[in-house]
Length: 400
Ligand SMILES: Cc1ncc(C[n+]2csc(CCOP(=O)(O)OP(=O)(O)O)c2C)c(N)n1
Ligand SMILES: [Mg+2]
Image (tube, rainbow, N blue to C red):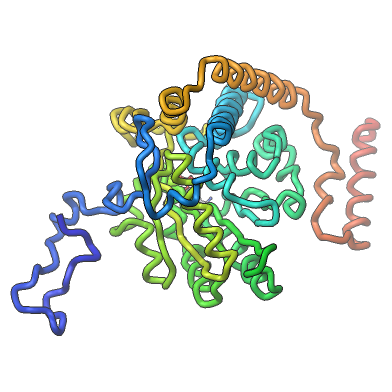
C-alpha cells in the first residue's frame, strides 16, 4: 500500500511519465490515514509479553534488569490504582471532575522514568503518571479536581510544571523554557538538561503547538515534544486531526519524529531516553508520538459510548500496557506470585490513603485566592486581601 509521503504529484519535474499518480480521495479515505499503527512503530515488548529485538533502541535499555522491570510494573499498577480510586471518588461526589489516565500508563511511566531530576516537564491535565515519576504524591493532584487548589506542588523543586487545561498552550511554555536552558549554557556537558512537553493528538491541531515546533526548531531548543496519541480528542477521532501519521509532521519542521508503541513501557523508556539525550547534547528538538489508547472516558463528564464502538476498546484491551509486562516478568524473568501480591497490597494501601486524604481535605480559607498571584505580593493586592478578609469576618460574625 502506498503511504502519503510516497505520493508523487502528477507533474513533478524529473519524474518519469507513468510514475504512480496521487491516489484518489477514496483511496485515502480507505485507510491511508494517520491512524494506522504503520510500519515504523518502535516496539520492544509485544502485547503477548515477548521481548523483540530492536537494534536502533536496544542499547538504551541495556541496563534494564529484572529489578527495573519490576519497578516499572509497580509504577504502572500504582498509578492505575490511584486513577481508578479517583474515578470512584468523583462518582461519589468527592471530586468535581477527574481526568482518567487508564490505558496510558506505559506511555507515561516510560517517559517519566527517562527524565532526570534536572530536567523539566510540562504536562497537560492527564499526566498523573509523569507526576508520580517526578516524586509528586497522587494526593497532591486532588485539590485541582476537588476545586480547592490549582496544584499543590512546586514546579521548580519538582521539575514538573502545573497542569495546563488550555490545549497545547504548554508547548509554548516548554519551548520558551528549553530556549532558556540553551541560552544559559545548560545544553552539552555533563550536567546538561532537557525539557519534555506532554500533549495529546488533538492538541496537534492547535496553533500553539505549531508555534512551539517552529521556535524550537529554529533555536535547536532541547525539548522533546511527547505526543500521546490516544486516538481521541474528546469525541473527535484522530483521523479528523491529520492526514499523515503525527510523527511525520516533524519532518516539515526539520527535526526527527519517532512513533513508539505507547502501550510498551520498555519502548517508551528507550525512545524517551534517546530523545532526551539528543536534546541534552544539543541535537534537539525531537517529536515522539506514543501510539496508545484512552481506555476510559475523556473525563468523568464524558460518555464515550455516545461516539465510539465497544469493539474498539475490546481490541485495545488486548494491548493492555500492564498485562504484557506481567506476562514478560513471569515467563521471561521467573517472577513469582509473591511479587504481584505485594504490589496489589501496596496499591490497595495507596488507594485507602488517597481516599482518606480526599475526604478529609480542609476547605481553603478565603485568603487563598490571593496567594501566588505574583511572585512578590504588591501593596495593592495586600489591601484587597485585607478588605476581603474583613468582609468575610463580618459575614461570619452574623453582621450580614
Ligand atoms: C484551547 C482549548 N480549546 C478547547 C478546549 C476543550 N478541550 C478540552 S480537552 C480537549 C481535547 C484534547 O484532546 P487531546 O489533545 O487529544 O488530549 P487528550 O484529552 O486526548 O489527552 C478539548 C478540545 C480546551 N481545553 N482548550
Ligand atoms: Mg487524545
